Image 1 (cartoon, helix red, strand yellow):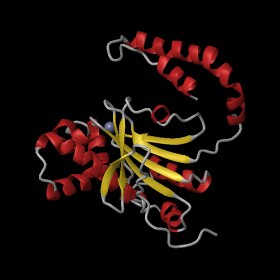
Image 2: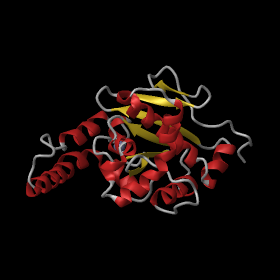
Image 3: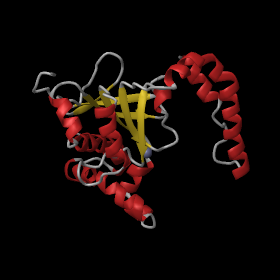
Image 4: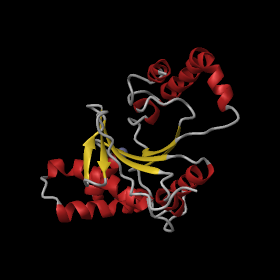
Length: 243
Ligand SMILES: [Zn+2]
């Protein structure tokens, strides 16, 4: 498995951001050729199994940020994660917006029967910076409207946290994950399977520089390091036996 993930890494351009448009496209085309010629043949069996069906065990909702690669940080094979990404790893509350995120959640739970949904925020998140500094997105009306779903986190931090400005971003990023977990639970498909103990939800914050993940523990009301020793859970207690 790690061999495959290394292959992902070797296909990533090293001098990101400074290429011309033509060079950037060529990097992608070269990457596909390397994937097709070097990586695919080694995993032919897996891909022929995946050609007709998928049965991912987890849904992964994270930010669209290019630095977050769910399959890489969880060392997951193709077909293992049902991934949905958007600016700020937002989950709109049920009923407010029947868009892509809500559709993906319903399909993952009802259609694919995933057992876990992970909402993963991250360090240095541009969306969270924009929430703290709304003037920066004044000319981006769609981004501004979307990030209203994170407004609750900003209010929770403003009313409860005495943190200085330099640490507000980290606290806000965690509170945003908690807020999106709350929104997630308003979706009927999610609520029903949480109640029967068939689905588990998780809130993570991934640190890009230090390669750490902190996970929300609902019972303790705090984020704990995901260090292999503890398994923090954001799931409420099940109230019904699964039928
Ligand atoms: Zn982000």
